[in-house]
Length: 368
Image 1 (cartoon, one colour):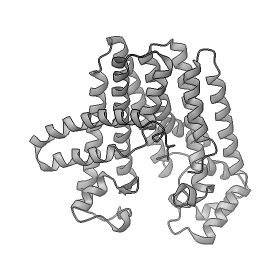
Image 2 (tube, helix red, strand yellow; image 1 turned 90 degrees about the vertical axis):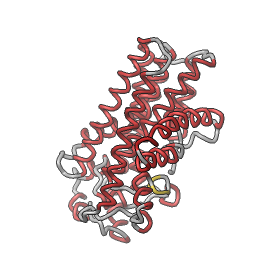
Image 3 (spheres, one colour; image 1 turned 180 degrees about the vertical axis):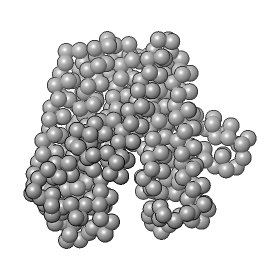
């Protein structure tokens, strides 16, 4: 999962409104959960604690774009905030399923829902390290089941929030169609990602780029922008242009994230600098390197769990030396240029253009 830019500090009032809506959505369900027993109730309590810890990039993008597209009254903006909060629920649902798939126990520097359940069972490994996937563990099975089930329930809660929004039927149906489209593409992207990582799907560059678009661009950028356009009632052509801009920006962002993970300064981005190489993550960097003569020296080390030290540094030097770093940076620049072309369209109001340019500015040149 990618690291997102921090938009929270400059928008405390809007963040408070989104947090309030999320607290209501989770709080109502937490109260209802009591009737099903303490274990089920605890799932919702942990979810409520964790869902408020994000950076709110998606809901902020939706509401700010909506504001820029229309002169909204207080009631209309309240509906936009409700839909934005529901999209944050969707985000958390995806994170929960992602943590189960990846076997992760920690997120945002603390135990995730799975890690919390393991800790309460007295079974959390030291430093939240990943458990041994080959060892049967009833506590781990219990905790991961909790992650799957809570993810399922949050998907249902997201649909409920969209379906119950106080909107004309035509707009409600349009939003529900967007939600279904987003879930389809994100799940398809996750399946591609796992297939690539497990060697089931051939790691071709186009396949990797498609996976990046599905997993990152669709629900992080396209969904908030298209939902804002739908709520604002703008022309379909404007929504289409915003969607294209979001897709270019999302792909640029994911490629940049992969680039930073491999070549960036870990003191800036805070990640293990060699984790992608050790895990054998199929990125555009690796897809390019595989086609060069340098691959013969890289391949024996790629996906080795013990990769580190000078050996890891040498692999990184080979990846840069074969042109993979320059190649991916070129793709980032290309997607950024396409994004700027899209938002220069006459159909995009100046306010919406400013919102997107500000977001792009946070992405360009970032180190973490």
